[in-house]
Length: 507
Image (tube, rainbow, N blue to C red; front, side, top):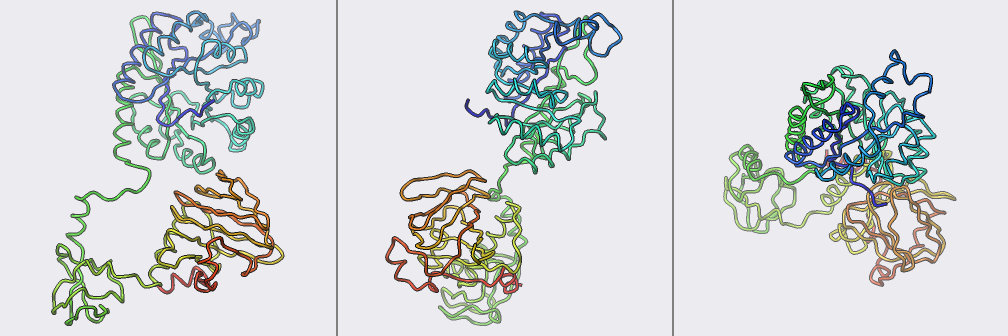
């Protein structure tokens, strides 16, 4: 089974809103197919299957005073009916989806070729049913209403150990759900606890209220579900299900929120925004006359507005820049001087800022007194292409290090005569070449490197991984490139006593 893309999926739950009326059901499917198409989203129309002959105890089938049973019995459709409805969904350009409430219903889902299986909150602890659903090898969406975090952990573990491709939905099983019961902060909690699992929002609030989907979207929910149906003279819709017009407004609110939220990563600012900010920035002006190639020290400049076109911004100035030409008093210094080679201290500071950002993103805490080593095999000026940041944690009979690589950074081929090491990827992406064999670990995977084995590694988006090894010795790294081998260790390493030292220098 190929992984299904849950992101951006909208599920329209038909439930029993078809009222057991095939013509009504077909009209609902076609209407919501149109709504889905007009909104330009990926939609799935969902059934609910119960095999009533076995799902309901024989003594209760005719009882009118037991919740849900009369409605289930009165709105039943046949397998032939559902086959026709399934075809209509496909013809309407939507995915097919179904919530089974018993094992026999899972068989029918597969028989009808329904694409996605839904686990209702009330079935999230139903192990016999979950076992059967897991056997389908189909994409699965599970709701979490009423579950404790321990129970959600159990559900996630159940699916993960069976290699199931699945997503979770935050849900509140109150119909309709008042605003003070929506608990939308649970989306944050689920995203943080299960970072590799798509998290969505299954909603039962007032169908005219679009605020919850906007908030859920802004919190990072990536898939959504709500009950749908249509009002007719014959059939009236319940208070928590949306008609086509309400659903169109709901989807429009989502689309508008997505535009407002923008991309997940930070992109460059627009020219308009840059122009607005530059109008308030200070430029670098000459206080005393400066000759060409003279160092532009702090006592020779001042910072003032307006910032002129082509002028150096105050924030880009650093001690030690060289003048590109002669400058008279009160003249603006050109931004061309920003191309002056950065002093080593500034290079290190900028590298460590990026390292701290990566550690923050990965939620990895480092002791402020930890020793940091920049390994730059071809010089500090080429560090962003070749090298790694090594944080020493402990080095005794056993050794632990944290290794960080910036995006697109490479570490050249080498081996150790004495040390045996194991890498474990904690965050990001990594490719390790071990004696000519390429390995692409996933976060959590480990790679054993034995003494004498040639290895190198690189990353595209940046990587943080742990190295657990036998004792580390400074003279135990042997490189393929003789240029590196000839360099003294101190010329290809910069040691920072601790993270605090970098911050204090820049304070």
